[in-house]
Image 1 (cartoon, rainbow, N blue to C red):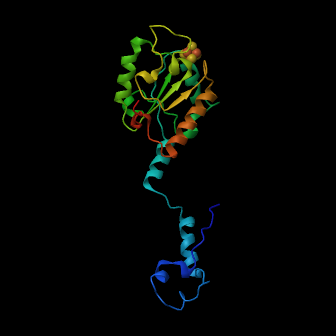
Image 2: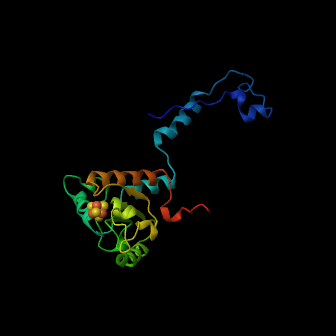
Image 3: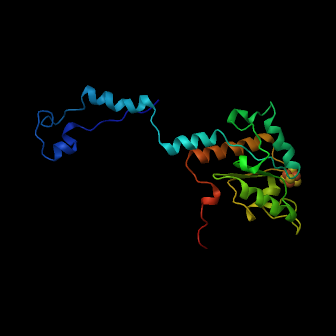
Length: 200
Ligand code: SF4
């Protein structure tokens, strides 16, 4: 329930302070009239918002992930569309086969050096705004693959918005990451590619 705001006393208002001497402003303890109170409550009754908030609400409720699996983590990712997890609840059931129709890249699995360039190309083909989830230890930091053949974290080549830990993360963990991403979008946090690194 919205908290009712308290209108200032008539004698505290700019018109009274500017020297207006009417019957109302000469009454120091005079509170707002009934009409003023009704006008004040209209904003709560009408559910006003801003364009930015409305757009963020729509974006968070209709993210479309790209169909892109790399390794064992992808098996867990695939299951989030099943009846058990049902990401259709978030308007996300449509995994897109073209990056041009997707705005969420779930990097699920280790990224070999050979796959780095295709992954970046897919990311570049996605329209903005777009978001990236690094799913699992391998995508986040290469996990157990501390060697020359595997990229040591996908954030070396694309900006990452949310990291999901685990090897593999269960579908519930990925769902948690997706919900965290929704919260960031609703809070007005810009996508990772818009956030500039502080100068070192
Ligand atoms: S984090 Fe574990 S499950 Fe996921 S790709 Fe790496 S080894 Fe496989």
